[in-house]
Length: 81
Image (tube, rainbow, N blue to C red; front, side, top):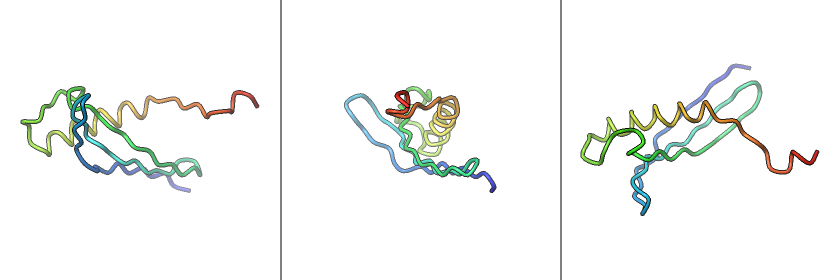
């Protein structure tokens, strides 16, 4: 089974904590299908609201994917088994 991963831009949202670029991740790796949502604070990507939308999306996607790849996941309740 081949591996494939897709990161798709959804929207920019404004919350009281700041502005966020939102992405949807879908993938297949080692026979496991997964989906996830990533919200990147545009300040963390070193861009601001005055930049072009393309620049905001590109920089936030780079930050989001980089951090997502570093994640280690723990399933709820698995530690008891």
